[in-house]
Image 1 (tube, rainbow over the protein chains, first blue to last red):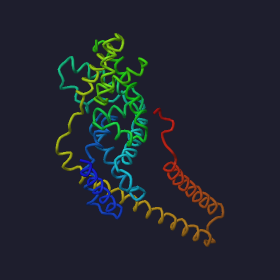
Image 2: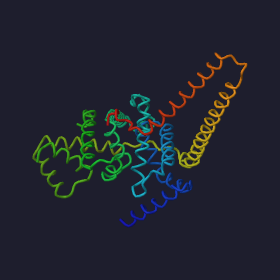
Image 3: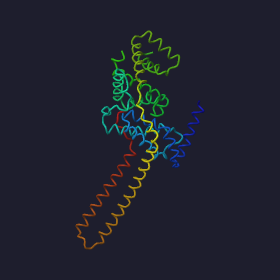
Image 4: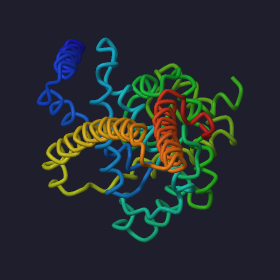
Length: 181
Length: 148
């Protein structure tokens, strides 16, 4: 299992070396590998499909333009997440309050009535969390990253990620109090 | 073990992040402590709801055209950068030529010459200031004012 992971990492390193030389086809491979992750990550912040698509593509464009400064001995995804994260924060800053945004990117409308109500409150609760807590919830529950991976992406110790997530859950639990009893 | 620590571990227990020994400690503790048992039950329900949350999947068409639309945007951006560099070069060259002609023309009133020179100097200062600001903004650490 570890050797499979190692091979994937070596292949990615080779692809990045080619991208650094200006090979757009190599970059295509990298984009294809991470486009869904980028899109869903942005969707967690912006809540609508068109903006998530725009932001994710803009992040790939910026990553391509800055790829020469990327250290190939490091992992691409944490570096890329910094770029997309900044774009999402820019977007939030422009809109001031992200909770004013319609929830059309989240699968709530198809849920049965009570489920829908709970999910709606939960999503609004997630939206009210701090940027970091929200990010951890998105990475952990919507993108199913391990603590190890989140720690690499956010460049923070695992213990601090675990603790932030617990306090985020505590806040969410409070919002959903009447449904959890 | 303090209750607060147990409560944090309950969250990890429900995520399946604890080893057998830690799991046993939690299981034993919630048998004896009503408060932590309540926390366990509520976090368990929250965990279930969180796991049910998902993003709406976009149409497959989006993924099919993702690269081509990204490539077009990339190409257009490069085009705009080259266009801007070219425009700025031409603008400076034009300004240089204009100043040269102005100074050579003996028929043009002095006040008009001064006015045009001030106008050109102002335009150049504005342009340089905008470019400098853009470069500075890129280098600066952003979002330090945003709550993290």
